Length: 196
Ligand code: SF4
Ligand code: SF4
Image 1 (cartoon, protein in one colour):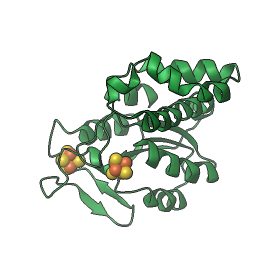
Image 2 (image 1 turned 45 degrees about the vertical axis):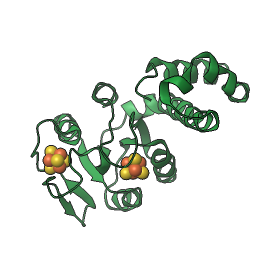
Image 3 (image 1 turned 90 degrees about the horizontal axis):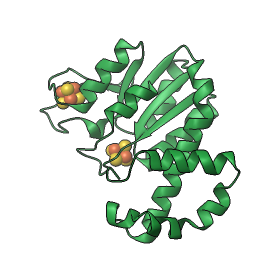
């Protein structure tokens, strides 16, 4: 998805939700995908592209609708996916703390995305969690009463975790991975910094 211009999802979400057009827009999504040549850019087949684009537009719409409330929150946390660590094996020196539950980055690699995100977010006063799965979200919310959460994950994980955050009444901002696959995944640092 990194080949699709970033403003695409934000603009489509903003315009279609503002005008109450998102349902009819979704009905015409196949045509839009062909017009914007999303299949060529992503390598996805048409039905997968429809699902992915719908999820991303919904996600951007939630981000826009929640933004004002999120900016009013004081106690915040950042949830990062463990799949964006530079290493998924013992070369990653992060220790998993079951009490949190989260990996705690040991800052072993300066070119690790999780390391960079962890440092930026902590400087801004966020608690940071590096999660091996969405099941940790409910435990963290039960343990610490956060008002706002920024979550980075793939679309599917954002959907599942988003429901837990909604149930807990936490204001949320989601950042989708631009390269999925459960290892060596990538998110956009610039987007993260702007969102934080
Ligand atoms: S910088 Fe942190 S997350 Fe990245 S590989 Fe090292 S310990 Fe793991
Ligand atoms: S790609 Fe999604 S499901 Fe896979 S490890 Fe990363 S966040 Fe979890």
